[in-house]
Length: 488
Image (cartoon, rainbow, N blue to C red; front, side, top):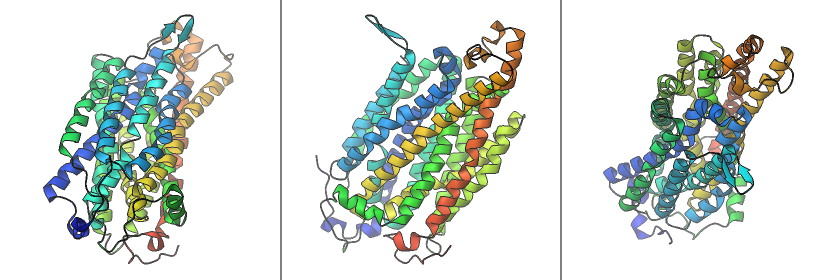
């Protein structure tokens, strides 16, 4: 099914947008709701991690694989083909099918357990990994078509604010994953949490298909803009290669995702191990306000950039650069203090100031290319952001945490293989002799704390990349040819 292409009806589209203002707002709300579900489903594993990890007996490295690379590999592998399909096909249909798929696979994560087929036994870790792969495949069909839809519904000067609103799905989804998943985990168990958050997505997919219209492609582009059927993959890559701002922004977004996904994946584990609270308490009392603060910060920085965009277009790059750099000391403070309240305050402030890059990455990614390759540009950016950032961020923290745990245990005189991290869990700690309990007290939480601090410091590199992006916007932005070149 092919999408429509703007023709005469789009003559005034670049001035008013597609549909009435109220309907555009409804579509934006619907797309944001789906993006929220996207992150609820992917973030839930991190929320239930403190109970799931000891229950399934997996290491921090394995948990990092589940929350990161195991999801991101197929997410990115099918992202490009789906984005290419979204450039010519009905984007509403694509999103409907994908929402239903990832919602179903999320629910199936709750069934992960050891399975024996004949003489072959498949561990619960591998079952859960396969379910996470399924979630990743479904979620690959969300953001590229959604960004393309927003670009056709909203005129250029309104897109930054619209994309900023849409980008709140990242933090709001994380917040609801904690609020709902944490409560259900404490009240019932981690398996029930997957059912509760996964199944409603099937209904959302149906309502979305019945109420959202597919707009003419390129509807909000100026009438004099050149219209072509589609750009080939080679043409799309060639156009992107001539846009240094796109690659600098993508590098900054990738590093930010590397840090952000890694930290968020292990934040509940950090809180439970360090302050000896439950998974639900960590999710509801710490992670939820942190996510809410981040959501407000995402919208606020997007709004701020939009307000000063007319006079200072470079704000779409230097505002997030400042926020990312400023977040570093607050995160270091949060991961090193012995006071839970102080840790929460550091996490709240760090989350508020850093997320401006989300609106920036989509605004710049859409703004530096022609209409024909918008979805493709988003997909290329997300391939790098998700494969390198999402894929390796959690895995990096998990691996570093295990390295520090094992080296710490060895330094305290415990032989290799004599003590595993899961034996230090409070529920089973009493089964160890006093010497091993003392060892656990010194390395169980500290190893993860150290890896979190190392990760937080890397936000400064992301801020630098966005600062460099600012220097190229004057030459590379398509929808703002009046941007003055900026010299470093």
